[in-house]
Amino acid sequence: MRNHSISPFRMRFRYLIPLALLLLAGVFACNKQSEIIGLNLVEGDRLEVGLDTTISLFAYSEREDSTRTDELDKNLLGSYYDPVFGRSTASFYTQVRLSVNAPAFGDSPVTDSVILTLIYSGYYGNTSTVQDFKVHEITEDMVFDSAYYSFDSLEVSELYAEVALQPKPEDSLIIDSVKYAPRLSFHLDNSFGDKILNATAAELSDNEAFQSFFKGLYVSAETVNASGEGAILYFNLLSADSRITIYYNDSLQFDLNINESCARYNRFKDEYHLSNDPLFLDQVVNGDTSLGSERLYLSGLTGIRTLLFFPGLKNWIESGNIVINQARLILPVVSSGTEYDPPSALSVYRIEDSGLETYTDDQYEGEDYLGGDYLESDGHYFFRISLHLQNLINETYHDNGLSIKVTGRSSKAGGTVIAGTNPLLSGPAMQLRIIYSVLE
Image 1 (cartoon, rainbow, N blue to C red):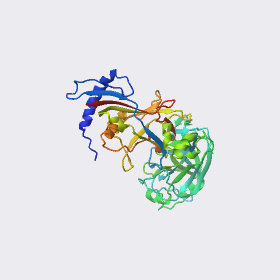
Image 2: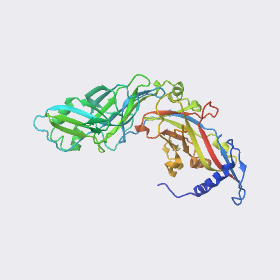
Image 3: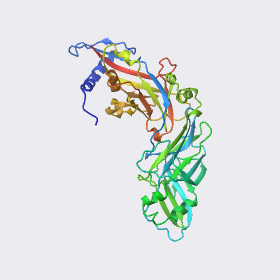
C-alpha cells in the first residue's frame, strides 16, 4: 500500500515554492543566470534562486506492441489512412444477450428482417468516404472480465452482412417529429433471425445458456486505400438503442441487447509503414532514436509513445545542493500534415527498473497540478514534473525515462507531431523550464 504521508522534503518543497516565486520577480535570465538573494531568510544558509532552460534532453518515439481494449466506454469501427501515421483499421467483437429469458416465438416463426443498430459516440477522420463493413458470427467463447488486447482475434463463421455505406455520425434520426441520436443501422441476413427464432427452449432458457449457443458478433471494416480517406467511428454499445432487432411473423419483434454484462473489445491493425513522412518512417518504423531531436510522434489506438530522458541533469546538479521549486516540461505541437485537431490530452508515466510504467509522484498532486491538456491558444501541452526531477536528483530512483502517451489511446484514433529536443531547431523545441533554489 502506498504511504501518503507528507515527507519532510515535500513539506520543505511546498514552503519554498511561494518564497522562490516572490524572489524570482527580478530574475529574467534563462541561461542559469542566478543571483545570491535572501541571505537572511534561511538561518545558517544562503538561498540562491534561479531559472534554467538549458538542461539537455533526449527523446524518441516508438511503436507500442499492444493495448488492452476490453470493456471500454467506446467501441471503434472503420479504417483511416493518415498521411503521417499510415493506415489504421478498427473492428470489434461483442457478445449479445436475451432481452428476456425463455422467449416464446410460437410455432414455425418466420423472420421478416433483422436490423443491427449502433449508436454513434464520435469519430475521427473523413466521413465522406464510403466504407465497407462486415458482420460475422463468433465461434469461440468470450469471457467477461478477461483481458483482451488490440491484437487478439477470435474464430468466426457465418457472414451475416456485407455492406458499403457512407457514415453519418452527425445526422440525427427523426421519426414522427421525434429526434433520436445518430446511429449506424444495417440489415443482417435473415438466417441470423432464423437461428435465434428456431433455437431450442434450453438454448434460450437464460443468458448463460444463450451465450453458449450464440457466442457473439464480429463487426469489421475493410481497409481504405487513399491517404486522407476514411474514418474511425466511435460507438456507444452500452446505449439502450445499440441492439439487434428481429422482426418476425409480420408484426412481432424481439431484441438482443448489448450491455454491461457483455464481453466486448476492440481489435486494431496499424500499418505505420504506409506513412508519407520519411522522418516518421526512419524513427518509428526503422527505430532511429537519434531523430527525436527533430520531431516526435504520439498516436492513439495500439499507440505510438515518446520516451524522454534527462542526460543533462547529472552535470547540472553538481553546481550545488539544489531544491527544485517547479519544473515544467513544454511540448510544442508542430504541423502534423493532417487537418484534424491534436488529441485533447496526453498522459505521462515513469518507467521502473522492471520496465513497467507507473505514476510519477507529481501525478498524486492532482490532474490540475500535473497538466497534460492541449492548450490551443499556446499550441502546446505541458506537464509539471518537479517531484520526479527532485527524486532523480536525490537518486530515489533511476532515470529509466518518462513515457508520454495519448490519453485514452485504446479508444481514441488520431495523433500529433511534437517538436524535437534540439534547441537549435528553426521552430519551437521541447523545453524543460526549472525554477530552483541552491542551499549553500
